[in-house]
Structure formats: structure tokens, C-alpha cells
Length: 375
Image (cartoon, rainbow, N blue to C red):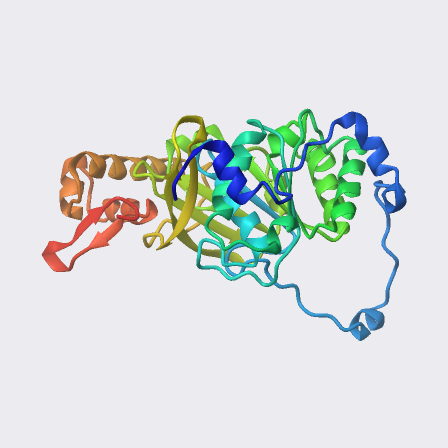
């Protein structure tokens, strides 16, 4: 796609749409939330008691995923290190949902949705470019009006008045999905390591949004210790207490390999799905440089087993994964026996580390070589 600057890109894709309306100021939130149904209390409430007979007699369909194989209903948390592509994936999900076209050109959308994308960091321009770039891969149509972008500075959903404004905005546009980018910028003053604080200031507002009838996608940062090992479970890519993962219907984790490819880990209440490979593509230069993802197929076998990262054995396993990846990066694809010789390991230790790190096995018999994940 030809890149001719911000004006050209946004003019072609976004200018005539509601992708990026002016962000509201908090001084105006009271008037917006004051009208009509928005006067309803945002405090916790008890649902009407119902008998099992009443529940069974009511016709209902089982909840369906928003994007088959990629995005579940309810609350989804996307965790990743900085610059790993959290927002990039969120742009793709938002545009796929509103346009009704497959996400990553692969995963089908059940039905078009109205999406409210709320961002609170890095300024609005970066997000506008990302949404525009994701939209440019789809054909033009009337679906642009179904995606509304809001950049909210100094916004805090843990505050009742800000939550009340958000509920009013959801009702105003009749949103189906809300994307919150990110937890750090939109939930101020939260002690991420305190489960009780997180439950009060994050879980309760999110559950209130779900009770409003919307599905929620929340972006969150990974722990700093992620840089010391190769993650094998999506929950490892969420910083803070385990309360965030416990309340989610699904956790998506992004881990960026040095090759530039990204490993997408997927976990839900029914277990784990096989990790996927995402391949980046770029457009523009400097501040106008934007990235999107393409589906690159399944990630290499291995690396999907869960583990307890707090035990001495787990720490050695993490160090072993790092060691085999580093030696392959320096020397290229190698047979397992050569890796064991170079590291001074006994038989099978290298095999376990190679599989846990997601390295790729190529060839048969004596010609077998192990290369970096995804290669």
C-alpha cells in the first residue's frame, strides 16, 4: 500500500467515518451521562431470583465466540511486553468485528458488531494510524460507522463518575464490544499485585460493563521477568496478581521472537489452544510507521505445556530454554547431539529444552536439525 502521510492515509480510510471522533473532556461527562437510561445506578445490584424451571423454560442459544478460534465472548485480556503488538492485534480485532471480515484473513467473524475502542496512552495519532492501516486491507463500505474511537486522557474507570460516563457512551452508540487500551492508562492508582485492590478497582467495573451487555477486550502489560525466559502459557504474559486471569473468559498472550515473528498463546476456561504464529508487515516511516499482523500458521510444536515458574526445577527449565535458543541463534540450525556436546549436557536434556522453547525440528534420521521457533 502506498504511504503518502497522515492526511492521505486517514483521508482515504477514516475521514468520512466515525473511527476517530473528537475525544470528550471529563468536564462534559456529567451532561452526557445525565440523560435517559444513563441515570441508572452503576453500583452493584442483585439479579432477580429465578427457579431452575424458569431457566429451563426460557429458549436460549449457547454463547458463540465473537471470532471463531480467536476471540471469545465475555472478558478477554491480551497480555504482552512493550512493543510486542498488543494494540496492533486489537486494531485487527476491532476492524474485523465491525466489517464482518475474517480476522488475520483466516478467522471468521460470527456477525458484524459495533465497537467502541478506548485508548489512554501514547496519544490519539498512533491509534488512528493503526486503525486506518487495518481498515485499508478491507473493502470500503458502510461498516466504518460501526467503529468509534475515543482517546481519553486522565480517565479512570475505577472512579464511579467515569464508569457512569462509559456506560452512557455504550448506550448512546449501542456498542456490542468495548476495547480498553490499556489497563495501566485507564485504571489509575491500582496496586496490580494486590488481589483485593484489583478486584475492587478493575474486576467490578469490568463486570459492570459485561452486565450492560457488551463484551470487553482489555490490553495489559507483561511482567519484566518475561525477558528472562520463553513463555509457554498465556497467563505468564499478564503482570500483577492472578485475579485478572481468573475473571477473564480468555487470555491471549503475545511473545515476540528476535526474528520478528510473534507467538500468540491462547488460553480459555476449557484449556489451551495450540499457539499461532503472527508475521508482521509494515508501512510508512518514522512517526508514521505502522504495523499489522498476518497469520503465519501454527507455531512450532512444543512450548504449550503449562509449568510452575516458582519452583527450582522450573527455573532450570527456563534457563535451559534460553541456552538452546541462544546457541542456535549464534551457530544456526544444529542436531540435538551437537547442542548437548556444546552445552555439556546429558542425553535428553536438550530435547526437553528444545521442545519447551518451541524450536522447529527439520529432517529425518541423522539429518535432523533444530532451528529457531517458526523457522
